[in-house]
Amino acid sequence: MAANPLVLGSRSPRRSELLQAAGIPFVVRVADIDETPRPAESPREYVLRLAEEKARAVPTGPDEFVLTADTTVVLDGRILGKPADTADAARMLAGLSGNRHDVITGVCLMRGGRRLSLAAASTAVWFDPMTDDEIAEYAASGEPLDKAGAYAIQGTASRWISRIDGSYSNVVGLPVALVYRLLGESGWSR
Image: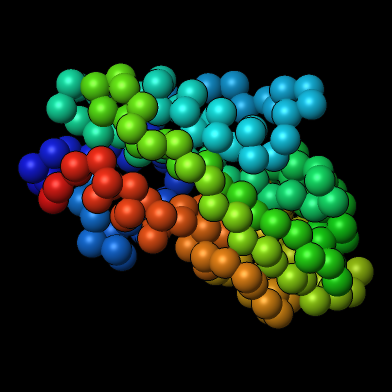
């Protein structure tokens, strides 16, 4: 266990896998919050607000560090959250097909109820054109249903992603290099 325990405030298996792969020890503890975007809230403001609200909602002790994140996909200035169903996933994928979009993750680090860091990472992603049949098949696969923007870069959708500019792990759901830097700046130690 870490000398200063790190609590990951996320039930995302992808975030857990990314931290494990980076050799960062943690425990998982989550709290649910309302993730509805506010009127006129920019995508960056949205993910930063949610990351901080999640951090404040996670139960922690006075010496524990809590790390939370929220990731969204942004196409033409619009937030693409998790699809409601297969038809919604297909609609999102049709919009992404042949286009560039951004993936933005807000990251919050707190200790003892005090915010230590609040930062965002953004990665540009280019999708190759998808046929209607490819969109329908991928949407029906189930993979898009619990993913912001209706795709997983580390999964089947990698077939259509021709380029990214920025952090790959950010697109998966956690900008690991940013997190590691913020942990170091905060005084957290393993």
